[in-house]
Length: 79
Image 1 (cartoon, rainbow, N blue to C red):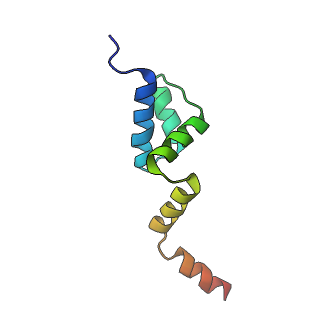
Image 2 (cartoon, helix red, strand yellow):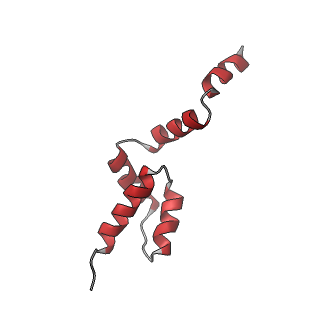
């Protein structure tokens, strides 16, 4: 008996992993492990819908979190 259809499970997994900051390649690999397949563009769309942010916005947040002094260091190097 099928409790969850593949599409619902896939979307839930994408939203969960995307919320943890995982990218499309990681999510696609996790889906493949479960025997499910989504195109990277579909994964990207689901993540953006769930987070309300584009990939570029998420990347900027990651850089800011990992390298908090990046912008100030960059400005100092330009002087």
